Amino acid sequence: MPMSTIDSPPRPAVLPAEPLSAPIRPTPKPRRRPRRGPRRRPAREPRRRLPRTPRQIDALGPERRLEMYRGGALTRQECVIWAGRYPEEIPLVNGEIEWIALSLADLD
Image (cartoon, rainbow, N blue to C red; front, top):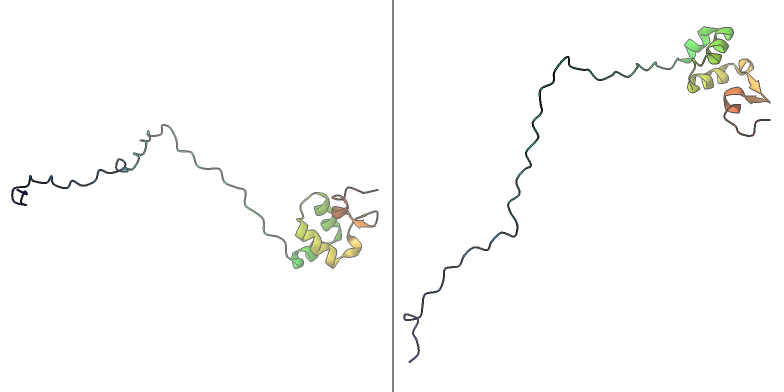
């Protein structure tokens, strides 16, 4: 006689599939020890000077402009303003503007 469904052995309950990996947990942050002594402040960058305007360069006068250029107090932008407004004052090396000539490798 064939077994009826009533007489069949009970089926095992369906179990949920096991996870493929362990659950992801956040990594605990390391505890910081309190500092001892005075708190240090980060070093400040020196304040940048705003470039001079053409009016400020005009107000310097020819001797003062040359003195500031020789002392390294003029930026490249200020030198370009100076050369554009007063080309006769600009120091030349072999017919080339001095700060440009200094960067050339084939200077004779």
